[in-house]
Image 1 (cartoon, rainbow, N blue to C red):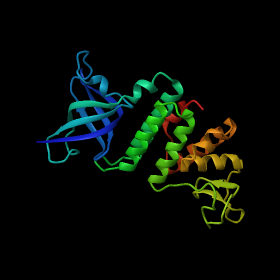
Image 2: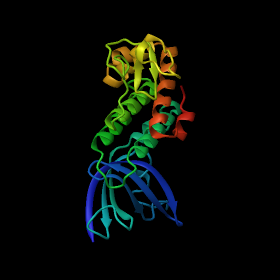
Image 3: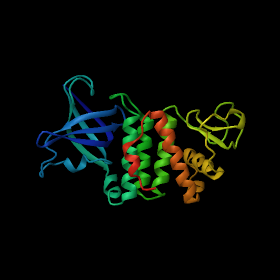
Image 4: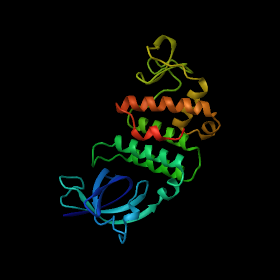
Length: 248
């Protein structure tokens, strides 16, 4: 029998029995973790409201073995709220749908339970904090999060230099299959020709240049979102269900 303590973000919840829930969290030290929260669906539950999606919490787990992730699900025995991001996200459709896509992305990129994914965890915390504070348009925050998640998982796209030969950009052609921007000599079938402003916007989102990103025209932002969604789907091998509901 072991006790573990970690901070994490609630990714989703599932009903279990009459009053319990299975909580999926992305934690700082242990990556993705699933645990049972007893009695949290009862109205008198002490911490049921703290274990809702988007919540940043400090959790104590009780495990039957020496590892947090094993044959049996751990139990959530204590929960303290660090940041209630959900309270500032769920009241706005644009923020809510963008945040839902972020949670699904984080879960998809951390499929091996118990494997630390600190960069992905920190990206999610930063994105939820920015979204909850309404610092930038929700679709831009989502696309920045998706691009950086791809990058930290080894799929960083190029929006300037040629992804195949390295020819300095800007390069007009773009292919999700080959890693981004392409020069005329490396162009492959199926390449698209996005506007230069769209590629500049995507590069700004990836690098964190919010001055450039915030000044982008809506049509370039929409075109960029389409490229990001296609690039993400290619590398995840299937799309995100939540993306279809995002308010662009």
